[in-house]
Image (cartoon, rainbow, N blue to C red; front, side, top):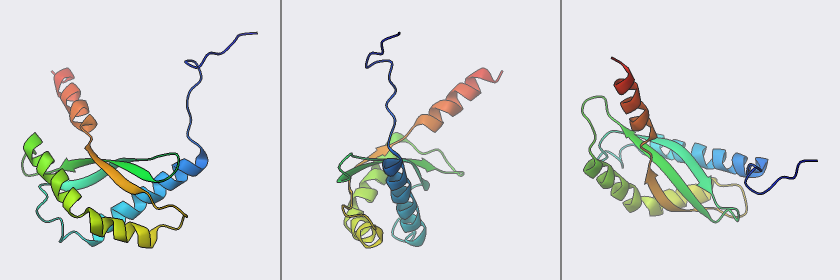
Length: 129
């Protein structure tokens, strides 16, 4: 019989955590769509890529990406966009608390810019000859 060590066992999330992350993703998306006037200073369009919630459902990390069809968004613009998100976080937390059905409402601990789509585009352009 083959023994399994910790490295060969894949970590999987429980169905409950996946469901809570999807719920948070949905609430955030609804908030951004319904309050687009508050985010008029953001350069580009905000896209929520991924949401991670801690095991005790007290904290969340939100991965966002910014898209623009008119011009490229620089790293400085992305930092400014994250600052705008942080400035509006109290209102966002209030909205989240009103729409969260579980006992503990996660606090958005960190906003992270996800650049994976930019990396995919770079590789695609490099391979295209």
